[in-house]
Length: 474
Image (cartoon, rainbow, N blue to C red; front, side, top):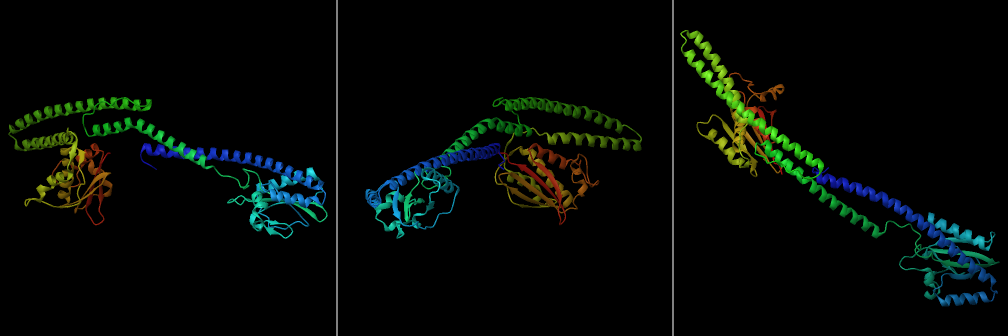
């Protein structure tokens, strides 16, 4: 299935058009064939009446005049029937029966018997041109002069079936009448859809798909603008209110998005002011308490107060750092991820570096995002790998869909039941390690703000793989 709305609408429209055209063509074709069958039977009755008139005419002629009249008819050429007198009925290879052939034969037989008598000895059959036999000598059609029978019994290059009627009009005298069915029933085969009908179906389907495609494209433009605005807002950029245009449903969505944008903007401003106030209000009393603790004479009590203040200050700094690092206010710009990685890795490549880093692959193109936030995100992942796994191995996979960075370490890994728990603030597996336990959580929040994700997976050969996925939006 296509992923885009336009592709799905076009596919659905195409299926509906094809189904509707197939049903309408089937109904039209059945009606066409019914009318053709009715016209065929009418033509067969008319042909049978002409045959009956010819038989009555030859019956009325004196015996000596019959061959003379036949010679004159053959010399004239272009007559409707080929007529001859034989002393016996000729035996020929009959064409296989079809519904149309059987209906014509039954209709001709019925009319002849009604006009000439029920007890009439006759045979009516369809014969192919190659199997047609004429005269007592059973000559083939091609053996006769073209003026005798070809004009009446051949229609090159179609070679339609020939209706052969043999009627006994006297003892040892059979009247032989051969003819073609009149137009448009010469071939007697049911016709499929005419070429004009197929062209009509093709053109109407193409125009309908074109108009549906233009309509969907026109109506989906506000949705594309909405998607771009939502992504920019998720990255913290200043987003202008959307124009409320398009269909009524799209207008409602745009109006709801504008209202949500205003509420989120107010919330972010209030949160920033709140934590600024907390930072100011908490650090002042903590500093004042430290000064008072220094005045205490009892060193044991002084040490206890100092440890409590250190713990309180650690909690305050951790909370403020969490808010500060996940709410970096930057403009979105194209970021050279290769240069960014080099800046992050470079300190560890120095002789004083405390770890070894390898890198495989590189970014194919710039990524639209927040430079400092992305640097903080990737830096946290590499710091964790070096802190817990000594070495960090970077693997980059980049294409038109997403930029993917795998950071593998050589550490002990993370228990499966705690792969999600390590993203929680202040959670650390190793209690002796320094830090606030915020690195992975901050990295994931930054990835989420870019529409991406950070996930963990234990490697089979040992160590932990941290995967950062940053989708590239069209």
